[in-house]
Amino acid sequence: MPRILTRENAIRWAPFLVLLALVILFTAINPSFLSQRNFARIAIAAAPALMVAVGVTFIIVMGSIDLSMEGVISLTAVLFCFLVLALGGTLASGGWIAIPVILVAGAAIGLVNGLIHVRLKIPSFMASLALGFVGTGAAILLTGGNIVKFDDPTFRALLTWRILGFPLMVYVAGMCLVLAWFIQAHTRLGRHFYAVGGGEELAHASGVRVRQVRLAGFSLAGFFYAIAAILQVAKIGQAESVTGSNFMFMSITSVVVGGVALWGGIGGVWNTLVGVLIVAVINNGMVVIGLPDFLQAAVLGLLVIIAVILSTDRRSVAFVK
Amino acid sequence: MDIQRLKPHLPWITLLVLVAIVGIADPSFLKPANLLSLAGDIVPLFIMALGLTFAIYIGGIDLSAQSMANMITVVASVYLAPLGIWVAALCILAGFTLGTLSGYLTTRMYVPSFISTLAVGGICFSVAQWLSGNRALNMDATQRNETFGWMIGRTGIVPHELFIALGLLAICLIIERRTTLGRALKAVGAGELAAAASGLNVARYKILAFAISGGLAAVAGLLFSVKLSGGAPTIANGFLLPAIVAVLVGGTPLTGGVGGVLNTAIGTLIVAVIRASMLYFGIAATQQQMVFGLVLIVAIALTIDRSKLRTVK
Image (cartoon, rainbow over the protein chains, first blue to last red):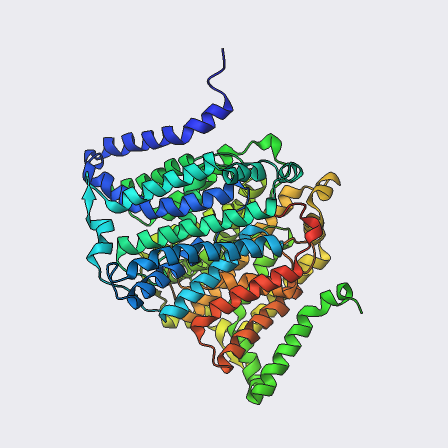
């Protein structure tokens, strides 16, 4: 009989159990937490965050890290608004072209990120951090510090049009999650992400073109950041140079808390979904039960530390930087 | 002359070339008074970069430095009235303790330093928001002048901040060159496994490096709040990027082991000259972040020791 209480099983199911426990805890303190209306609120908060987290999941599965999301989201959000305005100000008047253009732009920024990392051989956390600063800088430059917005009921339908009580953007995020799962589970690229994360030298020796896989991973991440940027613009109705703020910490916390190991090769987009929901439920629940919101950063900080400690197999790690 | 022998000298050559370029474009830039006030203005950044040097020297990174400085500006503003001069001790102690926490998490709990310091930065941000009630705080002007006025005055044309900077630089230089701690840090940076195999208590020295980084970030925050006579949870945002740039363009690579605090002094001056030159050449302040981001990428690419990285993750 196989043992049920193994370390692997514990790690696989722990995030989900934590999520359940949190929902029960918050409901016990304030029953109004468990309402459809509140769940919709959590889903809206989680939709853009999920896209960012899914993007960075691929990178973390490869054993790298991407800290550029804040800059990339700010820049693509600002570009998106400018582009829609230039194309007539509404999706119907031709502004819809902006959506594919911005997705490609996001992937292109991700590719640059990957090129800096792979070609110049700079560790990814620093390459992406620097590129993120450049992105934020570019967003400040484009906007001059101002807010950009356009008023289009069709586009706002992402937030206002509700099906079964949840706005359209939640379904869009859900479909993109399925797309990400498909890439992860059913494409060669997805398997190569795991090969590189599980052991880069072995993957290379087995004929995986590691550099190309890395470049593809960073481009894919940029693509998902651009989706997040569009959803974020739909959610708050405007773009500015701080649109991407807080996404870095939140998304990495989500991914790690969901059970994707920072060392690479373990976990996937479903873990990320659970992680994003844990973070969103905590953020929402703290407000619902009346805790002050300044605690959020500290709680996220403690959460990420605990998650990394729990997910690390200390026998297999020699030292960390 | 091959490039490897030239490499250690690149930082100060860069600095001289930059000063010369700006000086030729605008001779008034080279007036001693202007240069000194330029150097004085950059001191809080320099102190933060000085601390970061220790974290980077051992091959780690401290991304909490900016949040730490933010938190300390709030702590200093809140507790100046009840504690007087002792608020300085409180600030440094807080920075040192939180730095120790980062170091402990990194070494004993195997949390990579960029994550552990990011998380500690989150804690700092929460503390800052809680203490300040999310508002900008002001110090009582007379009390500030009585307690910390000596920090920000001028003697002749020399800003007092420069004395503080030189004092801290001297202390750090002694730690780096003349103490067991300094030697141990160099060993850890040059090759952590070898250092551990030689019987060095690597974890203890790494924790100390992060603690020093935290403590100096706190001093930077304290000086910054005294200069501005107040504090807020996001007031020092924008420090982290130039501070990292200062360490790296100074010639301490991300992989650690070479460089040091003197390099960071030169690196900070390079940052100061780049900033000033951007103003002279009419590049608006809003464009600076982009420029520094690009400079950072170039600096890392030039300094990093790729032989130490078997696989670049």
